[in-house]
Image 1 (cartoon, one colour):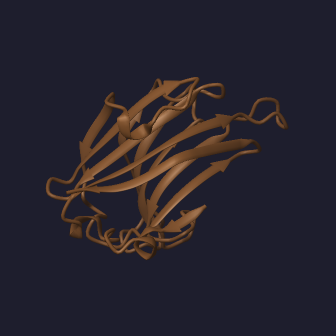
Image 2 (tube, rainbow, N blue to C red):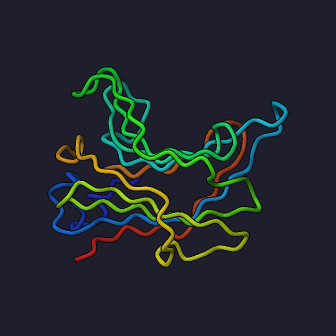
Length: 177
């Protein structure tokens, strides 16, 4: 699912650095692995991207993905396709080895970006009950990166891949003035 955030709200500016306040994206996600191939790992994805399809040849942006790696690993990446204005880029910004497991585990995620400093923060908690992702305070990683933040990233993409199901809930996008 791809949402054009700039079209939904005039307060959200697609060039992240043009926003005058810290941006917060928060959501819950749960994940089921597939059974068709034995026990295929299903991958969930949260993308802030230049195009509505992250596999598009000219697309670039930032993503949080998990579930499809060894164990319960989760990554925040900076990625660009080969034909993007940046050429081919794959930069792991935050790497969490003990992340979200499969159902009945439900993850609460909060990602923040501060356009004044270029800093990203990832907050994460896991439970078998849905938590309000805006209330979580457990920061599991932070980094600084503003390589794509001065170019349009209007699309928020929520995805699941590999033969099974991914469930998103309680999506919040907020500018903290």
